[in-house]
Length: 477
Image 1 (cartoon, rainbow, N blue to C red):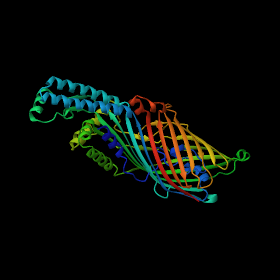
Image 2: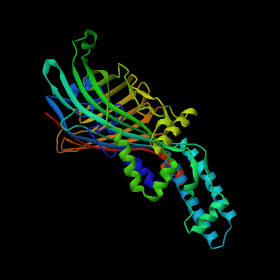
Image 3: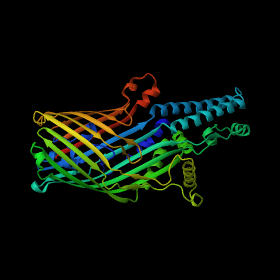
């Protein structure tokens, strides 16, 4: 069952549309290196709009840009809890068979059921505070981003893009199994198997948030007029602006744990199909907003310093509202979900009316190149915290080493390491490879590295927090 539930959640992001949103998920070389800027790194201009001048001689376009990402927390605990619950359900089945064969009593069956009730209740409560899984996919519309340098009129960049992502977590409500002696005897006399899930009563639910965000980016950058005290030291200053039109749909849904457990045990394929159908039905309409970013780069010989301010206008994206007049909901299952949402809102576990504020963010990056940029060292840091679409916060710092020979027949290598200043136990490792000067392959893993070799399977499972892979083809002239 545990695999079917995890597959169901991950499958929600399997339908991909045009995607690429630098505020939430990285793709291309940025997957390995973060938000650094370098003349040979195609993803530079997607962060600091001023960096497009450095990466575009005449024109640059992207043929393919795709990335898949999985973030999670508490995987070890999820596996342990799932195994414990499944084992206890099997124990009840065995005890009931012994009762039918007169090798056990009704009291033994009730005792096993009490143990399951305690195990189930404590397990869901544990997961509610520790577990989530967040799959996402990104891919650019072919031929974008497209950058064009027009000389003294600057460099223009057009990108059409979107993001598909989901986040699933647990909400805990009291769990009980309403089964008495008479029902056990009746089930035995009828010749049916005893399925404890049929007698479970709980508001515990799977809490699923989904996001579809389409972007149209238009950016402009050019070298700024000479500033005396900077030009005196040979420093070139480039400024850039980016405006992004956002079409988005943010959904929230609750799914009763009882129904998830029932379908996960009986028909996991139907569970996946039902969840996908429900989620995709919610993406039929879109809301709109826009955001503005500004960036500056200062270049002195082989050193490039960049500062970027994102979301200058502080836009707000609104989720679909939960709850409401539940008594008026005609569909029984939808009405149950509505009442569950009202219950969890009343105890403060969720918010019925929710929005995502794209707060202003500031990042700084620096790159130092050697031997005609064949070797480069780079770093980037977020000066402010940032929240993703679902409210998870981070503040990252990245360091990168780039080995990028001038000859196109030599592969280029990218090595990156990163830290989240809000969770310093985590380490991000990135590896990227460029082939024939146009194909980029990048991977990333985030984990508590010391726990990956633990003998404790729960600790080992909890160590892994993120995996990503990306492929992109960029052409520059």
